[in-house]
Image 1 (tube, rainbow, N blue to C red):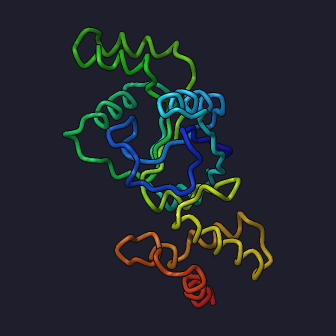
Image 2: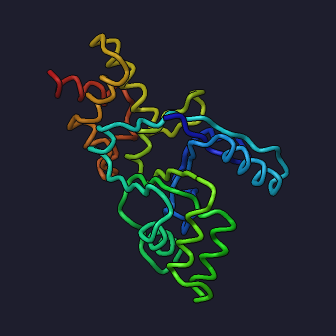
Length: 222
């Protein structure tokens, strides 16, 4: 899936620690499948920072292996479950959820204002949800963990985290050594024990050269 991130500057490196907390789906790196929405966000954020804004394009591996390896939460539209989830995430007193990836609609300015009305009991939940049925379709994906970033590939190769870069290099080498396509190589890597160890931050494997990790993978695969 092609997805886009709007910002005031080009994203050279994804650093989850720099992402704002208490957003719709928690702290993480946000993208959308609607380019015009990313362009609008880029313009708005750019104005606040004195720039024109920049849209960066990514490829999200939205496939069965992503569902197997990451804990993923999907919201098909504006509904009661989505509303409760957003309200919890916007509460600084609530702990962060444990999902790697969350996908669903956006609480834009208009919706956010109505959420505030709902929290102040100026509108009932049923009436609010009825209003949302007529809201413009929106979309966002939040990548919340290092593991989740391995499912996101920068199209222009310039906006990637060090962790994601390891995955790209290993997948590319697998394609060459085993003469397989990208999806086959990605699936092979993501389902390996080596990947499980790599995605465990406590191992610090992501700090090692990709060649060293690839040698581990080769031994595992025989």
